[in-house]
Image (tube, rainbow, N blue to C red; front, top):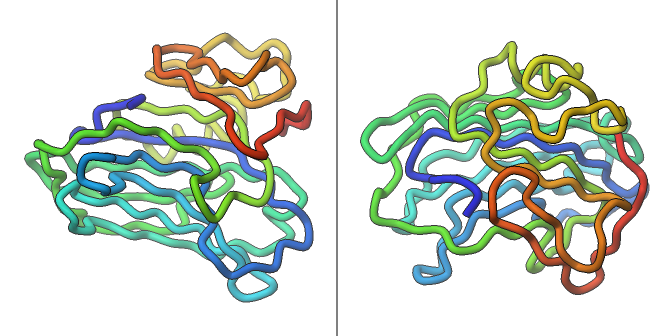
Length: 219
């Protein structure tokens, strides 16, 4: 796992949904999964609901079969379909204390689940999945960054605007090798060789499977 999910953490990424996506099914963007208990600890999904909106859902489980938080937000098609949008999630609960879960889109706080329950300290994570394994994500995504702390509202806003923790937007060739304060960082793009997506900071590399392809298109 790129993080310790029994502690507070944050996640940031860029997405662009294919134009004309019509399905109302939940499409998996990223999951942290415990295969021993068949439980996800963190799941971020997007689905069309209704035809003029896309709904972003965050599911966080305590690792013992219970749901601790589930913030969601409706995003107009024009802001995420055929154009790049930025998503960030912060989770302030730990294995010993409750805390808020926040969902951001394009640098702005769009939903808060107040007082999310604490996580089960005995649960583990052995799989990080992007775009699957079923209900595959219909679009493109890049710059997946994990933090082992809680980003502030201002930090998320600065990440979206290409400052502070992420000094330059993804398409800027001057960007530093790693965002400040991050523990894992994945870039999906034409710089990938073969089927391995290297962790730019840690050691949790990803492997491309199925119909996943690499594109030079970046935000």
